Length: 390
Image (cartoon, rainbow, N blue to C red):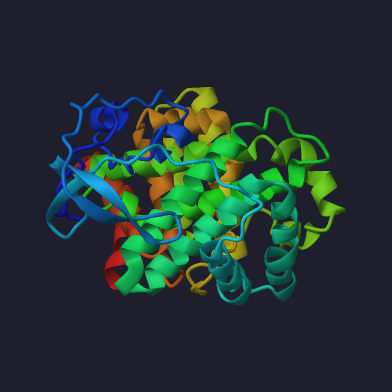
């Protein structure tokens, strides 16, 4: 994944500048800081001079006059005047929003079908998820945010508009979700549905990875895994039996292949050889063994590489089951942990027909290969061969 030429955001927050990631410049907090629970700060700028009025889009795409300042803004179409915009006003739930109705219609008719091929699960995403969203705005906003991202992928002529809409809606969803202090029977289902959609959204939003080098791309993927696990852990361990008896039970229902997973590719078993040949302590061996077992489960349930997927079903099934010890080793960029992650990239590569995944698998494998270098190429030969030949 070669680094692309692109203009840097000049108005990003100090945290994003420090971490060398693209800032969406949402205020009072950008999405990167909101999802990472970081202190978001923007450098103070000189008071803008009074200038000529220009049209700026509001939340629904309508245009209203605003005053320009002397700076410039990069929107991919060259330099245009920077606009001084007040922080967004809190959305009014009692007002009819045509833009949101458009997105909800697209969710009902198109986007929910891309989540899973299972008819019962499709019905759950179409109706049950929206029903909970009407009572829990953080869920409804994430449904609309993911739908806006889907429309951005499908309508290139309005891509900028829908990407902006998706960013705003996701920011609103995360701000509302931060008010959830604890989970109980009243909110555990909306929290679970929200976390599932958030995980898909983080992987699907390729606008956040454009121009990243391999190291920064790896940081992005690790950040996605960390956010997904932190939210999922609020509900999965305690409330799974409750989910199985609830109206989202179709989403929980799935095949349950058992070890030794005879149907998975023989190349996967080289991971056990890797752990056996490495000089590791007992706790690391335990963490890697658990991560590999869950990865083998994912290969078995997805039937990769015999089957290619065009929906998001099971794509995030591995990260949410990982032990904390493995995540620690992954964040330390331990070679064994990264090689296991590259094999997860193989699974994602067979989801490349899904708009939510696309080229994520291939990019992840190449990023791991660049991080580790030639010494470890023996263990990455199969993942690299997969993405080069298919």
